[in-house]
Amino acid sequence: LLECRLDNVIYRLGFANSRNQARQMVRHNHFLVNGKKVNIPSYTVRTGDIVAVAASSKRSKAFNNLGESLKKAAAPGWLNLNAGELSAKVLHNPGGEDMKAINFNPQVIVEFYSR
Image 1 (spheres, rainbow, N blue to C red):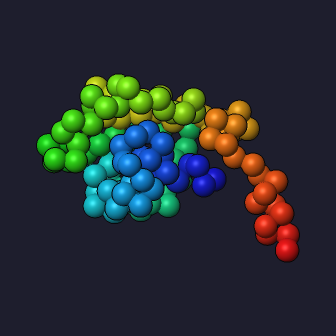
Image 2 (tube, rainbow, N blue to C red; image 1 turned 60 degrees about the horizontal axis):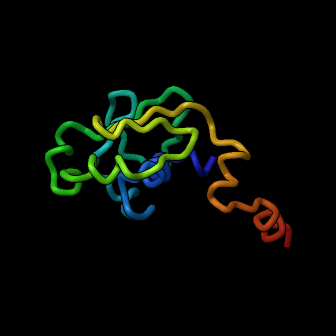
């Protein structure tokens, strides 16, 4: 569920350099989900959702050269990035195979919270 948060999706796509920056960008209405502005960082994206940079935000300094840097970046397998339009589609929920790519060990979390 944490991977499906809007601020994390923005970070994973490469629209932001950190999760804190992604969170701030979402709070400042820079992104649309299915054509509607969403300013809640904890918004959960679902399969089939389209996340895009708002048209008014594409002219801002933060997004000017983003298209060029996104062409070199690799999005996770559960997201389909369209670098030219600064948008992405959620193909499916992230699974176990997607977590291996980010060095994720759920056993460590279970042990931490079992204390």
